Amino acid sequence: MDFSCEHKPVWVGRIAVAACEECAEVDWFSNQGPVDSSEAMAALFGTYDLLGPLDALGAPCPRVLVYAPPSARKRRNLDALPRCVWLKAGPQLWMSTDGEVLLLATTQPLLFENLIRGA
Ligand SMILES: [Zn+2]
Image (cartoon, rainbow, N blue to C red; front, side, top):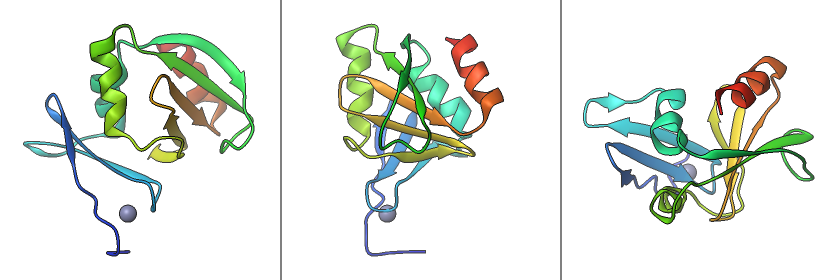
């Protein structure tokens, strides 16, 4: 474990997001303790609209899914994440943002299907 960087949590509703640009890791918490990544992602970005898959360069895998916030208020949830860094959001799942849209990448074809269908 590397203690040279701070993993300072940012509260978004009932979820605390500790996203670290240097470790490319993100941890999710609530008042009750650690929160499962899929539950946290759903709480923060569950209302986002899927714009579609995109061929991506520089991503952990060749295709990513692009999600847009439904409102300016929901867009602010992206502010909890560092910009233009791929973070490990869960097993086989990475996410990134430019502050406007959310990008999800997975190396697991089944998970990719679920992400598409779940939108
Ligand atoms: Zn770190």
